[in-house]
Length: 271
Image 1 (cartoon, one colour):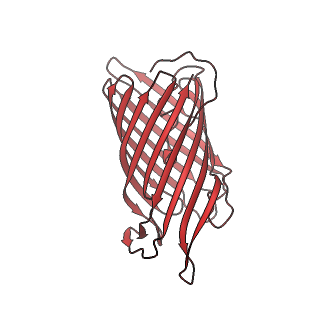
Image 2: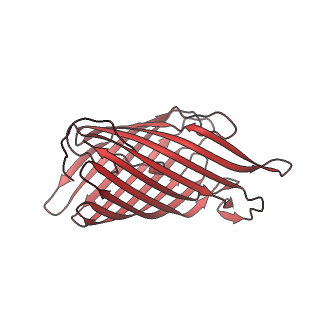
Image 3: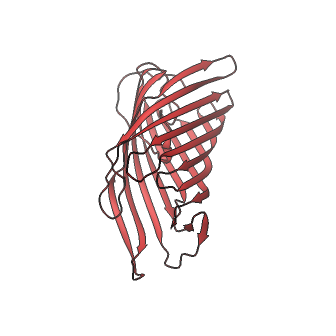
């Protein structure tokens, strides 16, 4: 993808939490000096599957949770190997819970999840038949809403580090991201994830990928998901991406609702 007149801008932005690890716009650009951009993703999660550990158990009270996250993300590239990214998720969530007398009710909360700042550093390789990179990403997250009966964040400031890899030919792309977060909230475990993506560049503007992600959360839960993504470059400025991840395997601490599947739809712009 070539630089489209590098100037200006503040932009649209995207999802992530599951975009746990994605950094550039649509995880693709800008790769030129002075490039900047933004993206917005809508992420939807839902589940009515009740688990005890990794085993499904009956859910006669129809307990359920639903979550919608608006991911706003921006990036600035000083040099193709040095960037800064910012992510701000806005969360609307609700869950159906059961009281001690076995009556059910809905709990709701709306607010900001942790903001994330990151400094992706990449070493690019360009060979006659392929290109790629190796990278490291120091990052920090902070400031999420932690009040109420259904808090969005634990309120701590946490520190993270990622290692990234990518190799791409005219037809095939393989990438991986390993991330680790040092959780600072009392009683919480550290968190880590790995994300692997294999894609087919079926057009000079489009790609179809399969993405697999494993996440071990700070509350002790585990989530393994995988599914297709579709990427399209409309005009070297506006980009789009749709992702669907099926929950392939999940585990919770004690008895709790599963995280379930995830759908993300986003638009981004780069300059």
